[in-house]
Image 1 (cartoon, helix red, strand yellow):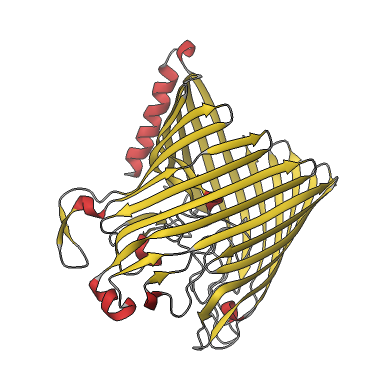
Image 2 (cartoon, one colour; image 1 turned 90 degrees about the vertical axis):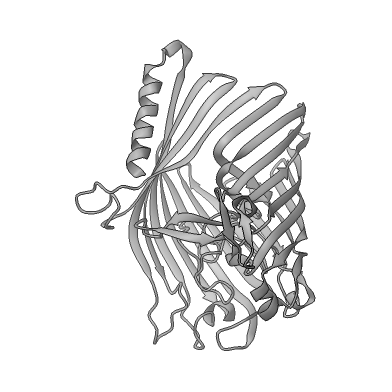
Length: 468
């Protein structure tokens, strides 16, 4: 499969070079970064149990190729390669020659006024990433109603089960199509003026049987493929009929910016017989989650002050027994689907390899998928020199509803985190970031995997990045 991918890319470039110059404009671009990461105490370690600390250097290269036939038609592609320095089976190994070549995006961009279509494997974002921010197969059909109103209808094919018949978790023989997962989104953008926008949305995620859907991603060290099942966040899910409705507001007034988001969830999910009997005592559960955020910034010359607050609902002890999912549901799996990075340690910041183990996420793989959280942030950016900037952020996080800890008790506090990021613009397009972060952890983290208080997580690192 990897040889076929490389041959396909080579063939694409050969075709591009052979097309007459008058008929095609070749646009090349890309992104490269190499980073050193030192993360400690992320796995809930204590003095007697040594966990999986991370200390390594990795490299990522992304290459962009766009074939521009005209202002109305483009063919857009993005490829990616990843390696851990010294990592066997990656091109960072001794002797290099590792095979890790990925196709991230490949789609056509077609403009036929007043319509604009993007068809293929592309990037999608919904509600700032709280619900979705990832690459996927699908279609964007955007209708320009006026210069200030755009009406996109979006289709995402989240999972294709193939053909034939399969036995579901309920023991019934079903058509493969029953296991498909499809998403539909209506996502207008309304410009109230040049600096103020409203983005309402209505989204629908549907599957006759959600139990088999999965995606395959490279492991943390890029050496193997790992299957991540959609139902990890909805154990026992069968027929899924999930809806969200929301509104985003953004404005800028002189030195001030302000943003706000509100999302409500409704619909239901049918439960498989095993989970119905032993876990939920209900044939189906109703979605009743919600999320709100509010934030802004003030630019005072060389310094910019930032404030942000997030509330995402959670399940209390009686939610599912009452037939409800009160927790905010963000679709996808570990490392795919919804993604809203926040703090460097607690929220998949610049070094997005993992988050700390928490009592409701022991692997730390869901840190950017915000649910059952109350988050506050005070930050400031300092422009020390024209080419040197310091960002300082203080974060506080707790659970919206109590979480059961490793010692059998309940707690709700994650802790307080301090992040420092120094960015130096070495040359045009070439940046160096130095990152330091420390988390004064509380019970949801210190007692996530051990009955003893684990050590506080910390992170240091450096990243050299080039964009072209």
